[in-house]
Image 1 (cartoon, one colour):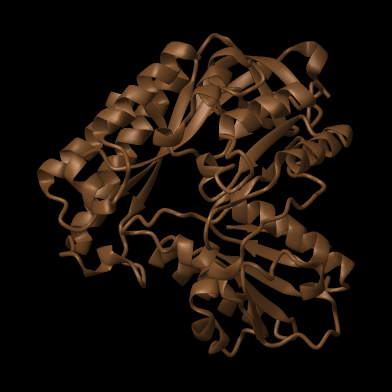
Image 2 (spheres, one colour):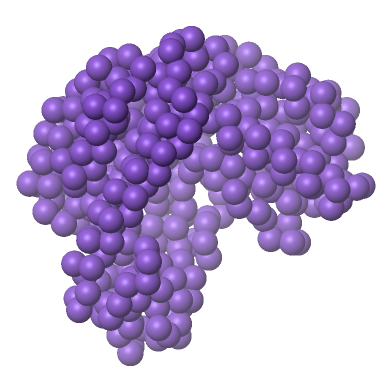
Length: 425
């Protein structure tokens, strides 16, 4: 969860990078609409814990700011508007389609207390130009929203609607403007990023968009993808991974599990072998590539043997940035009706997965000791390498600069590195 700067409307953001992007859109609209004193909670619904944390944050915001107007939006608000409207702390509930519209945040308007449209009726998504993130070093660009798949554990399609894409020309134009304003790195983001283009004329694949961006915005120094479904990776995308140095060598994969029976019960479209084959091929094309992944612990019917297979996927795929989700039943999902795994078992299995991910990350970071890495400095003394390893610098540099630094140590999940003298601020 992240919070806005004190002088801005206070935005409390939960969940994914797309939510973080949209919070910047909300901030701009709320500032322009004269709502500097509002507190806007942009919720996540991916787990029950995410919803609980949002409700807790709302109560705390009211205690700390008894006179503030508290607006609640995001996926949890879209899916459960009545539950949030029933909270006495909440002033307004705003749906996902409404939250990126400027008119929603006009101070003094006669907006309804609950403004949540049927997200399944939304057919288009628009690119929203924002000023950028993290001292303008990195910016997220929304190119897709919604999801047409129905994984049995996932409530997000009910919060985001069906898949819809931003036209390539609009994406290119926005990235060009961001680069002109000083952005060094752009991250393409969406709910189901690899489905981009499926609703556009000619159904272009994501790889086509990536190649167009790199060709038409030659001044863009670094391009990243937020999260992809590896089974949807198209030939153009694989060629870009192999040939385009400006496409950063880090992919976050929606894998979810390492056992075929659980993948089938999740209604995923890939097998364990598919996941391993994709990682092997991407590594062959780009040997320095790093992989992150979403992995779920304790999906209903998961046995000890299945958990062992899940654990082994980390090594089999060479994952180093593992995001572990303990399973929690979500409303309207088929998995909520399946035989559950005991809560204590889910917790223990999640801990196993996190420990394995921590060991894998430590091993990769240790492999960089004594080497020179290139990184984008998001803060004077912090940044990320091309393959998304976190780095703390021993002396400050100008935020937004791309520097080479010599790695001298590892501190937990961060590298310690000394920048070249010429790069120091």
